Length: 345
Image 1: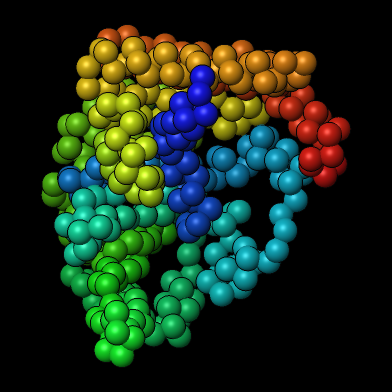
Image 2: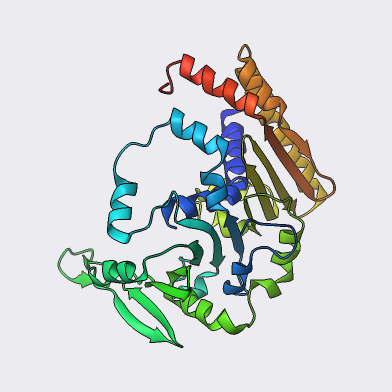
């Protein structure tokens, strides 16, 4: 396998894994009842019907999981960013956030041809007065929109000189960001267009629950406390990949990912390709990557066991990749890394 091919494989798998990553980033970056098979969490009704990516995380379930506690002990938190966030907003990410849903929509909703719109709907315990004061102090505006308080922060971009270095050029337009308190314990955060649309959807309307392409894939998910589904091009357009790499990516149309974080870790990734030939090619690429990884971990039984838990499947135009790490396998990995001095005991 050439160096170029290895890079291509790694990039492809990272993008496929971005479904689960989207959810995790959502709850770490801002502020999530557990997901069950069927129609998904109630908060989906606040996402618009034209959403191209939808993700979910049961933050409370993940934060209180045995795996999370092991990771916290092995990788002690450094810095005061979380404490500073709590002191300013009154939100303790560890205990105050129950779950989040996230939606991404086309760039037409953001007013910028290169920037899609995103919306996070978080359920938990929030100090509304403190949050509003925090944003007001930073120049945000507060308004009443259809009986809901909406706080909007308009980004200020400094003007930049033109090519002569003398005349200022108007800054690139960036969408404003808003926060709305949809109901007690439920907050919407995102571009102002989507936050107002979430308010519109409080009393019903064309939400993502009316989007059969998305919802059929949500219904097909394995149960888990993190998941994501969406159009693959919606991810690649945001990955900042080189144009040549994007052209060499497999012909994937849709992706779905789900994971269960408890005492261990179970995850499933699925990719739907344009045709069977593309699916077979993607399987070959993944097989090559796993074979290479096994060669490079020879003599490391704990890593070999982890790779053995990876199962490649699917049929027709669908490719699936599953991972199942038992608590024992995770302990072995942790002990190995600690013994190598890569983690603090």
